Length: 160
Image 1 (cartoon, rainbow, N blue to C red):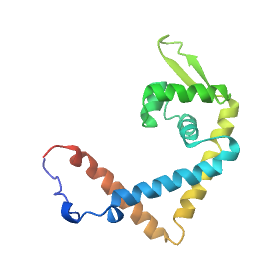
Image 2: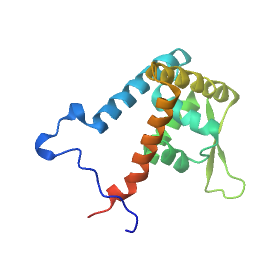
Image 3: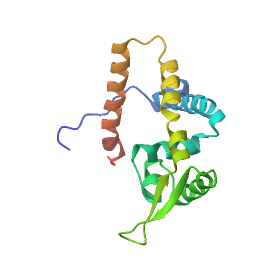
């Protein structure tokens, strides 16, 4: 593939240590962030499995079960069960499409919109806590580095 970068050689199988793995460290950070966000949203009756789809719906990132499942990196079956719980709480409703009766759209209720609006402040607080002591340039550099890793991802998935 023209312009493809050669893989780095930072890790070796014979010296691999999870404690020094970028993936392991990122997973620990993400898990901690999710737990801290859950703690902040618990008083509002929302768990991670619930606030993520609510927030995606609020952003307009998805309107059908299939789209929402894709956005939340979940299978359609588990997303349907989650929507059953959110609907039982009065946070969303399913509405059959007027253009295609086979399609069922998901809409937030007014209560669901209010619940989803609690998500950004919780996430911002958690992220700012994890970034304590970082300078703005360090924060920008961290985001740039993560974007570079994401850009490398398609090449990693290709067989060599």
